[in-house]
Structures are given as C-alpha cells and as structure tokens.
Length: 163
Image 1 (cartoon, helix red, strand yellow):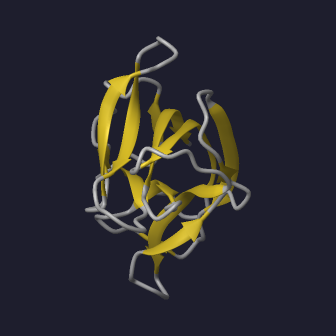
Image 2 (spheres, rainbow, N blue to C red):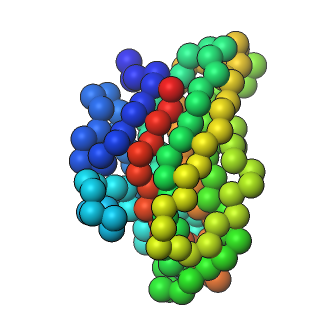
C-alpha cells in the first residue's frame, strides 16, 4: 500500500512508501537548492530530440477526495543548453477508473506556460478524484515538461504537497 498523501519539503527525505522516478527520456536526481536551503529534485532530459521529461511521484489516491496540490518550480534550460519560453510544464494525476482499468492521464494546471528562470515559481491547484477510482500499482502524481527548441527541457522542483 502506498501513501494517499505526500509532503516532500526536502528532496533528500522522501516519505516511506513514496517513489520518485522519471521515464526513459529523463532522470530525476537530488541536488542542492540554488537558494541555499535543503535539497530539491532536478529533472533532466537524457534523450535527443523532442522529448517530454517527467517527475513521477508514486502514490495512490482516495476515491471522491479533493486534493490540494502545490509545488515550486524553476525552469532551467533545454538539453541543448538553450533558454526556452512559453513551454508547458504541468501536473498530472495518473490513475484508472472502474470504467477504464488502464492508467490514464488527468492533466492539471493548463495555464503553465513557463520560461527559463532563476527564481522559484509557485504552482497550486486542486483536483477531485472520481468515486470510481480504481487503485493500481503504477498510480502517481506527475510533473511533466514539454520539449522546446528541438530538445527536452530541464527543471527543478521543491516543496511538493499532494493532500
């Protein structure tokens, strides 16, 4: 059983039962916070071309529950070392329902056109998990970044709260 809420204030202290991973197009590492306080997650693209880059937080959800989500994001450069602008970096609940047992995307934060920055950008929203939620082993909350300038992007994430 995975936790149904997650709070990660320091990336070096992941709560028991929570996994933080990426897809084959990227890596997620724990690095020093450029602001100087604690550790943060760094998502980096590792494959050439137009690649999406993910931070997957393995957890499960509660049917019918409304989750408040918040995190801070710092968009870096793309894999080519170039600045980018107006690129989508968004949150996503990944789960299935009793009507569709395949784990699917439930994308949040549609207004997340982000640009390379050296400051933290706060992100927050809420999402209600439907009553017909069907728990699966690979359920997760995901932060994903779309490619820009012909390359995947890199970004930092900290202070993740999903509860």
